[in-house]
Amino acid sequence: MKFQYALVILFFGITSCQEKDMISSKNSEDWSKRSIDISNKDSLEYGKSYLSIYSQIYSLSQHKTHNLTAMVSLRNTSDTDTIYLLRAEYYDTYGISIKSYFKKPIYLAPLETTEIIIDEVDVTGGTGSNFVFEWQIPRNASEPLFEGIMNSTMGQQGLSFTTQSVRIK
Image 1: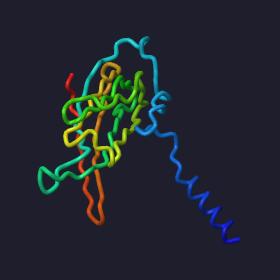
Image 2 (image 1 turned 60 degrees about the horizontal axis):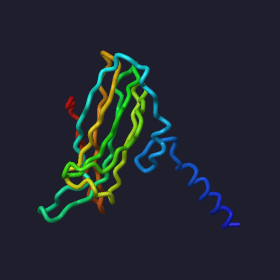
Image 3 (image 1 turned 45 degrees about the vertical axis):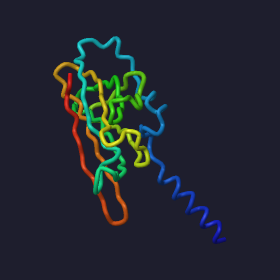
Image 4 (image 1 turned 180 degrees about the horizontal axis):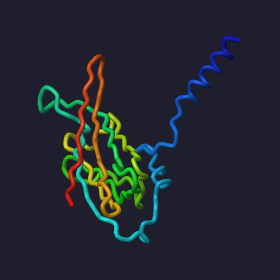
């Protein structure tokens, strides 16, 4: 009887922890759920943004690094307009492309946010990794905001900090 109770508790524990339909860097096919054809949309303003991300930071000296989890937050800051993200390209410290996150444009509804997660064990980006985003928005709409949230915990120590994108085009 105790075994049956344990199975029921385990079942509810697992099913209650399942996430809703969240887009993540772990499951790249999810981006296709957001893809959209914007070829018929005219008068969209083009932009390009740069975001610094840290997969690792130096600790104690240049010979010791500490791994970080990075959450890249892609935010539509408009409360009225849908925006379109054309590209999210991840680069390592040396400027070499590591990954392109979607092949076709995706949309973000007004005030919607989605994330890309770089796991703590993924150190391919190194200490100077970065993203370049290309986007299009309706004229006079507010620009998207791209933020990086880096964190790590070890024992009772915690470390977290943020970065914000800058428009480069």
